[in-house]
Structure formats: C-alpha cells, structure tokens
Length: 113
Length: 112
Image (cartoon, rainbow over all chains, first blue to last red; front, top):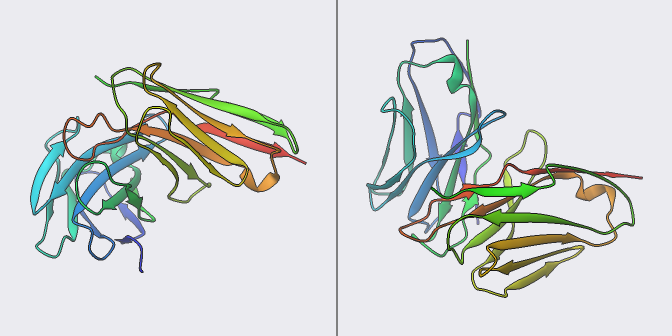
C-alpha cells in the first residue's frame, strides 16, 4: 500500500509570494492533518481536514489556508510568504478522525528568501 | 492549552546501555504517540498508546502510558547505534478529531 505522498518535496520562494503544497493520503484514509516543523518552534499543528471540511485549526495567521477534495487529497496554501515561513511542512493521514494512528508523508521543505 | 514536555532533550549514550526518555503532558488524555525522526526525514510511527497502563514493545524499545500521572516513558534496552535519531512524543487531547501536540523531541546519540 502506498504511503502518504507530498509534492513538491523542495521549494524555494521569495518573500511576498504565495505557495501551494499538495498531499495525497494513504488510499482509504479520509482525515488529513498538516504540521509545520521549524528548529525554533518544533512541530506545530496547522489544520485538520475531514470530509472536505476543516475540523481543527492551529494558531497560525490567516495567510495559512487549506482545503480537501472529494478524493481526500489536500492542499495547503501560504500567501504573502515571510522568511519565518521557511520550514518542513508535514502532512499526515489517518483512517478517520480520532483514535487512529497518523501516518506522515515525507514533507515539503520550503525555503523563503 | 495542552503542553507536552520531554526530557532529556539531548541524550548521548554508549552501546549496550539502558535509558529512559520521559514525556509529561498537562491535560487529561489517553492518546499518546511516539515517533522517530532521522535527520532530514519525516516522522516514523513507533507506538500508539490508547489507554492507561498501555505497554508496547518493539525490539529494543518499550513505551508505556500512565494517564493518571500524565506520563509516558520510552525505554531503550541495550542501545545500538541504529537507534540514533530524534524521538518525539505527541498527545492528542481527544476533544475532537486528530490534533497532535508534540514534545520538543529527544535527540539520541548512541556511541560505539
């Protein structure tokens, strides 16, 4: 069974630009969560999607948004990029919401210059 | 706000030795996860602990959960170099959905 896939794997953007990251969950998984990992702040929850609806949101500004499609694939978007947005963005999928293991994708390394 | 604290944050140990990593959390939860991360890589799931007293073992690693003490431990037995990595515990408060709060991570180095 294929794992969680994320594209692109690496990305370099300039301050002020916007970026869209994509995540395809494990086949049959319907819940997708996004996390940001930085050396300073560690791993932080961004948002969770289930049945095409955002179910939870972390403490991030409105520049961070996302969506989920009917096939459970998810995208996250960051507008007006700042240097501090440089991070590893991880997507995780689980079968459904709640007491289920989350499987993480390889991540997208975003560098903002 | 849920807080998750790990200690130690850095651990250097010799091969063959035993050690324990501790994970404390601030609110009631019976959903705790342990992950491993190698440099530049993603998170690999190690253990899922979903009840008080849960104990799981895989190879040289054993994890346990005490929900009353709000404490989980990851015990390493007879460490080998291949266990060198960063280990994270993560707690899901379970109020709704899947929302993990991670500890700071324990960077483990096993020296020959």
